[in-house]
Image 1 (cartoon, rainbow, N blue to C red):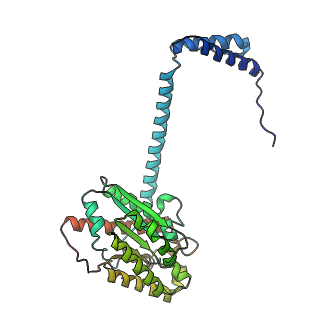
Image 2: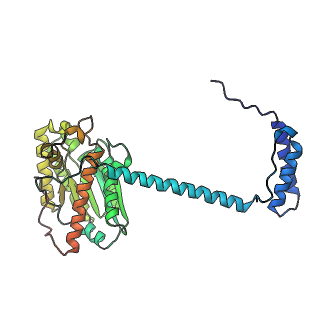
Image 3: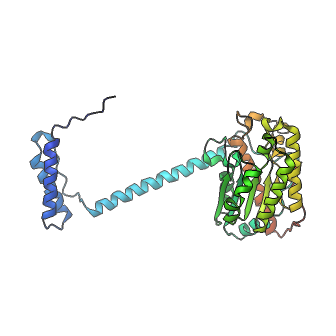
Length: 339
């Protein structure tokens, strides 16, 4: 393709004029920006042919620092307006996700996660919190149409609406394809070193898909939970998703769900039974699988991640409410069990 060429018959003359103007402005001891502008206009009118139609500026126009400041201010206002519009669009798209299909809690009456003393105490007093979302591709957000629909981002938005005075920082540490062996290698640097108040650990799906022994996975998770608790953080485990590629390995998936529940009981931590929650969507709420799982038969779509985040956030908020009401859930009682 030939490059575009612009026809500029007066370019050489104009170039000389500009050079002359620059020299005059450097040599002349003129302090007024208006005077400089007048010199520039006179030089341009002299250099340009009569049919080039160089228009003289109106006397009221001021060229100088004040004009530049106004230009920068206008540019900043434009950028701010664009940013506000973007926030409004994100908020609208986030609220519209449940307009046709509402996000309902499981009909079986799943109980809350119970006590999350560390993070709940900080949120109750309006302090800032650090939450690490630790996991694989469903934590990273594979299958979403945009970053705003990853579950950590949805959860952050929900908690910020609920606690506007608190500085809520949710760090996404999801790496596609990882399971317990790979996650343990990055546990210290990506989780513990962040000094989190809460760690939401999604684990087990890739172990099922790779035919890893669920018992081996459970041992690694138990070791990891102990290390996280030693740092003073609350922990919530998230078990595998209910989706065709997982349920076709029903025996392994079932064992993984049970063993992760056992780890949660032994260490008195919360567990979000994602497998049972998603099965409830399909079997009790009569939602087609493809309404919350994408075409790969494994990962959730925007609605699935959004509802998962909503229910998880509801449980965190409930834990804060219990603390404010003085309801003490014994630390040795596991209240959130798979149905």
